[in-house]
View 1 (cartoon, rainbow, N blue to C red):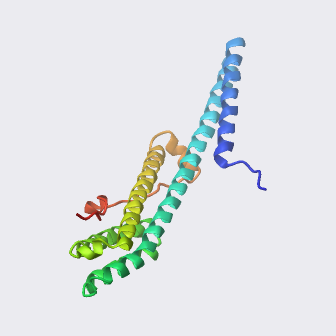
View 2 (cartoon, one colour):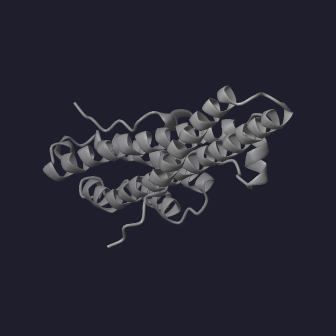
View 3 (cartoon, rainbow, N blue to C red):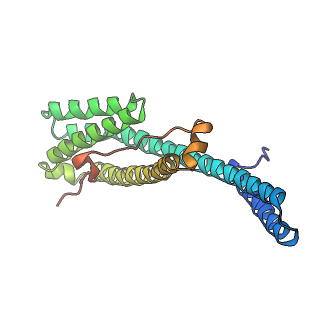
Length: 217
């Protein structure tokens, strides 16, 4: 069994030690005669502590971003996995809507083969548009809307849309904090020294920011 500590736990332990060091330093400077040597040592200690704390902050944010990105990938895959059954269900009632089915299938393929984060965002937006057209077709068929299989797929799509939106928000929030820390002085100096690079946002453009509406009356 792997008993190694989680990186975040190690960082918390290190930060606890740093707090103890600061406390000892505070007692030290208040009990010893003040001279230039002590002042230089104190300044040096503060600088080192700041460097370590800032570096740890970058590591924590980067870890959160990577975890959030993994969550996005999971939900996008789940979304893509729903498409074949959804298309086949609608096709059973509206076989003549060939163009709509082709657009949904094409968008799903683009999402599954997307490599970069930008490509994933574009493919996800494309799929959102295609699903809007598919559900617009379904609205014209009361028997389809009443189908138990279609209703289950409808609920699954809604649930996945919510999770994609949440994962995207969590990812973008951490990216914003990380990029801001990387862009302001003096933490940007430490970020550049240790080669931390900015992350791109996962964007939903225009109408794609709205959840796909799949409820029928």
